[in-house]
Image (cartoon, rainbow, N blue to C red):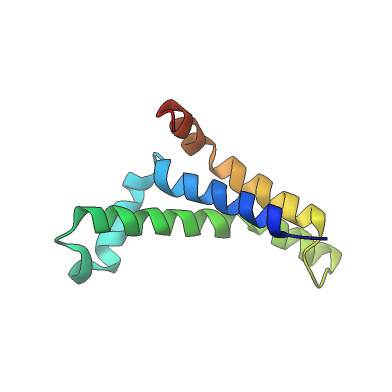
Length: 106
């Protein structure tokens, strides 16, 4: 089983969620607290790091159902169903951002 198409789709959804999510405003204070000395002069840098943090958070939280499934069945490697679960989790978390993505016609 090749995992590349799943990983590409998961990364695509996470990237769209990081860039177009309406929740990026909620992440901004955390970025300002975590890195006050580095990014205080650059608004673009603050939004870039916020986007990366939100994308990473989407990947981690979206992978929880797949990890629980793999633990439940005792799998040593990712199965096709666990990859589908990870993709579905990330896609569900990215729904508001996908709607924004199509609203901006990109």
